[in-house]
Length: 75
Image 1 (tube, one colour):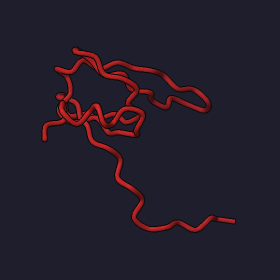
Image 2 (tube, one colour):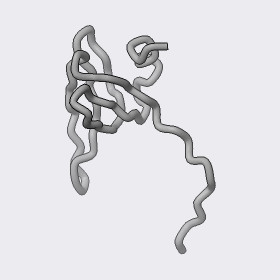
Image 3 (spheres, helix red, strand yellow):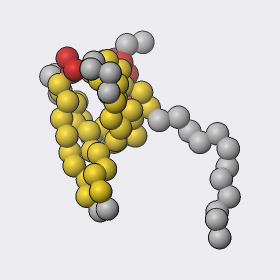
Image 4 (spheres, helix red, strand yellow):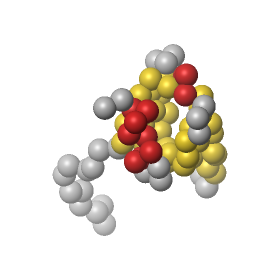
């Protein structure tokens, strides 16, 4: 199924976004309009930014996979 059809199910979920220029970004998919998506990205320390990406610049949107192995705490 094309990413355009599955994106609505990914709202409020962590996603990776593959862009047409070969780069990628990740964050929480906040909303989708007819022409762009809004992605909440981590910047630094306690700073987050809501960024928008035009749909024509997006190659794919994928949900984050689950962690496959439990990780023990370091303490």
